[in-house]
Length: 175
Ligand SMILES: *[C@@H]1O[C@H](CO)[C@@H](O)[C@H](O)[C@H]1NC(C)=O
Ligand SMILES: *[C@@H]1O[C@H](CO)[C@@H](O)[C@H](O)[C@H]1NC(C)=O
Ligand SMILES: *[C@@H]1O[C@H](CO)[C@@H](O)[C@H](O)[C@H]1NC(C)=O
Ligand SMILES: *[C@@H]1O[C@H](CO)[C@@H](O)[C@H](O)[C@H]1NC(C)=O
Ligand SMILES: *[C@@H]1O[C@H](CO)[C@@H](O)[C@H](O)[C@H]1NC(C)=O
Ligand SMILES: *[C@@H]1O[C@H](CO)[C@@H](O)[C@H](O)[C@H]1NC(C)=O
Ligand SMILES: *[C@@H]1O[C@H](CO)[C@@H](O)[C@H](O)[C@H]1NC(C)=O
Ligand SMILES: [Cu+2]
Image (cartoon, helix red, strand yellow):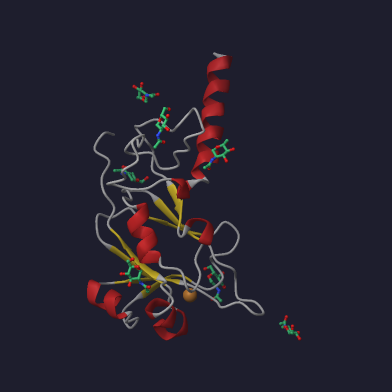
């Protein structure tokens, strides 16, 4: 009994430490022969990958790059797809300070606004300070396309800073 609990605790710790490595894996169509299919956080040197019947994952947007000007997040989203229903995206960015550009997180209501980086009807979901510390967390809990962008500098970060991407969460069929 006691050992079972200890074992479960170890699993939780292992899973938690693996969640931090959300960058490591790639999405569909990966040619890697050892690709396991659902393995967010898979780390090939770790002998205990998450069970295939996975819980939702926490994914840091941009991975180690976090959320900043001048990184192609569309590319990142494409390479890190698929994302799943109830996965959590974590946006990490420094709060405004001397010498750093502030960032934020907006959701566009439609594809047109997204393509044009038109913020008129976009909704701010995280302000310039909310990306600090552990970051701003957003759960993909609707089955819709999500259009994310940074809303700073009147859309400039979105337009030329690469700070926008789209995600359509999939269902995990084997719950
Ligand atoms: C797949 O696993 C085998 C055996 O563990 C290993 O020899 C091989 O290098 C791996 N291939 C890739 C692409 O990781
Ligand atoms: C995989 O996990 C091991 C042990 O936790 C760690 O030392 C190693 O750096 C990780 N590898 C990658 C590619 O993240
Ligand atoms: C994963 O979990 C399922 C359900 O709990 C279990 O049947 C299965 O054996 C587990 N697989 C591995 C590789 O641990
Ligand atoms: C998503 O999370 C909500 C709230 O925790 C839960 O009620 C729902 O069953 C989950 N849905 C799936 C498909 O995991
Ligand atoms: C910002 O940096 C400048 C030069 O490094 C310094 O003089 C100024 O006091 C700083 N302002 C704040 C608010 O830290
Ligand atoms: C950002 O949002 C947080 C949490 O809602 C709030 O405490 C903070 O004052 C806001 N900051 C700015 C600059 O609006
Ligand atoms: C990001 O990368 C994609 C595909 O690689 C490319 O089509 C797109 O123009 C790039 N966006 C920016 C802002 O550089
Ligand atoms: Cu920005």
